[in-house]
Length: 221
Image (cartoon, rainbow, N blue to C red; front, side):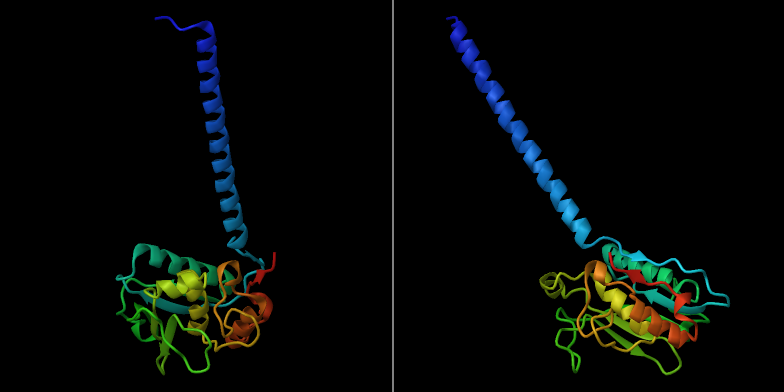
């Protein structure tokens, strides 16, 4: 039985309408994905740093050893924080990742280990939980416990392991908690706010006995 010309025309029109609807849905989905990528980039874009000339003299080296029990994704976030701090230190000091916790520099090394428990630690005077706990040794170096298993707390506060490391490396450099809304303030900074700002860089420069302009710091966008 042959279809009438009117039936063929109706079928073609129906198919074209379905294709048009499908195309619209694909386009909308694509735009939503692009918008999500844009807002994620805008909120957590890599911070912009100053580019000051390098300061003369030998750098102060801070060796760190990262426990291999960390997952690769966790290690990558730690290394990202270390790289950002080294850019801020601008050759005045340098954080070196060593392959072994033993050797000539062992007494000066910081050993970064996974802390037990899933809730971090409660520190006296802190409103929020601490997800990193440095325990320094009298002659230098020490142990930095990191609590990456506190994933629920990280998610609730929009924090990443990089945010935690940015703060804790400040402690490794010898800084105590700073006042005001800075990197080492009472609460964790997150995203593109978790960067070595001018106040933090100035405090580190004073400890290293160099001008503040010898270091770099992040600038607001």
